[in-house]
Amino acid sequence: MRATNGMIGLMLLCVSLARPFAGGGADAALKISLEEVLSVGALNDEALFQWTGVAADEEGFIYVLDAMDYSLKKFDRRGTLVKRGGGRGQGPGEFMIPRLLDASPNFLFATDQNVAGILMYDRELNFKKKIPCPSLVAHMKALGDRRVAVAAMSFQEPGKIFVLDDGGTVLSEIAYLDDQPGVLMDSVSFVPDAGGNFFLAFLFQDRIEQWTDRGQRVWSTRLLGGRRSEMKKISSLSLPAETVYKDIALDARGHLFVLGGRLAKAPGRTVFVLSLDGTLLTTFTLPDTSHCLYIDRANSLYVRANDGITLKKYRIRYE
Amino acid sequence: MTRRTNLPAVFLAILLAVSAALPGVGADDQSGVCERALSDCLNDPASQATAPFGTVVCIVGYAFCKKYIDPGSAC
Image 1 (spheres, helix red, strand yellow):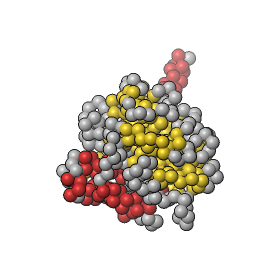
Image 2 (cartoon, chains in turn blue, red):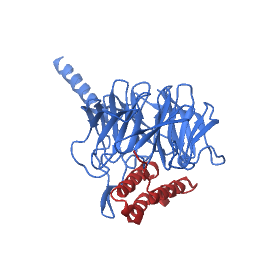
Image 3 (cartoon, chains in turn yellow, orange):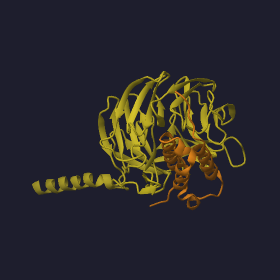
Image 4 (cartoon, helix red, strand yellow):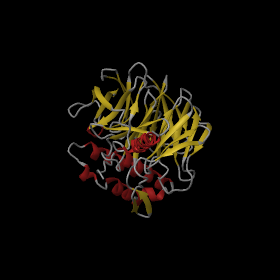
């Protein structure tokens, strides 16, 4: 009897140890599939040319930054263009290289690649103000109508996320580097949760982490065996050449969605799904390559297709 | 805060955007496009004249290029 119990215990132990490696490190219990519910922009129309940033509001309107025509566009829930703002230039509300976009309940927040600030609009695309930032912006998320978090693109102060009020005052900061890993190795995408936590995915490192808003790391995980980006010498600079994680998003069920870069099995298409404690649950593959993931409050997923000519909206199905 | 824009970097970004948007331009065709654009940007007299800001702008453009355009290949 004792021997039988011992054998059963040993078998359970083996099963529990083997579990993280099943299906390539994923929990086979969760499967995610996508159901397309909307496609905006096509090769034969002029709705979108090369969109870069997307956000959606609670009424179902979709806002898109388009780098090719320097615009901020508003689409209704059926994908019909209802308004166009922005424009090329360096005046108020204009863009030279529009990049990032996010929405709070009443405002939109956008970035221009070479501008150390955030452009704030109302939902009718009227420019409201520019929020000054300590440096160029690598990533940005709205934390409400009056607060925004930015990952700084700075060589003087690398590896910091700043929480700013709408006047540009730094309310808090998270320093997420342990060392000085080299130029661009601090590049991250991040997503906040309602509890004041930040989840970071490194662009050129195999690192996904949770940090509190007080600057304490909760966990850190690597999904690709700790592989590092190949470094290339360009002029006098040594820079990472291979992206690892391109973006991170949080769904309504408390899962982290992390978009894999060049080191993933399907670059720009593999999505790693993690629990909030950093455990890999499953992976799935997008139909087309994307540079970003955006999940709205209704739990719809927005990604790129046709190299930015098309925006796809999917319903996330959990099995 | 004053807006400052490096024109060569802007043109490079637009060039990259156009190349990425062209139908039929596959991963192989774009291999090294971000590296070449960065090299051109760093060697541009306008970038050098506005260093170190011009250098930062070039590197920022490279990072966004890697994220937005570089398709990579399966390993």
